[in-house]
Image (tube, rainbow, N blue to C red; front, side, top):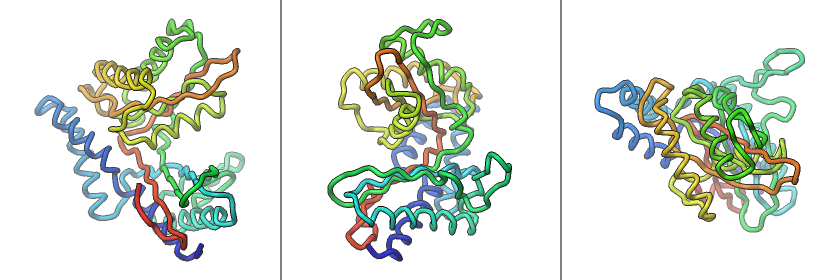
Length: 292
């Protein structure tokens, strides 16, 4: 791979992720705007969001003042090319921060000082996954407000009358939406992991947010639950920004992971309307072959 071409590719991937709302989310937002009551606060709120997103795209400016924390997943055959991509991601983050496209969002927890360039211990987060075929790089920028609304449940839970079954899972997911009360900038999108451990659950739940809103879960029982959660959450009436309305969620995506017999975790990764994620496939020299 050519390091210069890879850097340009990662720069464009992260810049676009920060400034352009993915097409499926934009489509869902337009549908939500149409479905809200004419003249309502909910419709007005969604209209303002859509106008802001349009201006961000037109002027190549961040979709939100909180440009989030970066998660990158590199899927590739093992080899030195992985490290070239990782280095390009880090350098692109530094460059975009200098330009003001990315806000300075990395704080050292011991000194309480901002690092100033969006890099630090384990920042940005870069994960490697062995895979055949061309190199694929997925990037997500997740804001602090929505990350604060993410949560994890351990079943059974007497507090919400949730047992170790799928109805208990449903209760957990709906409770997470209710507890958020529109915080985290609803309408939101939920990524959910049923099972796993304390650590893997959060990462796998966040991975679900890369799924296209219109895709259908290949597991029928999960497909049914995703649709049920979407309908029931929107029936809560919390609405955009918690100000009331018909649209509290734009989507819910659920995955599973094997669990220890003694543990039954349900992990919810809450994402705001500005769910910023894109994926690219690179050619042999490191240029962008296609957007996925």
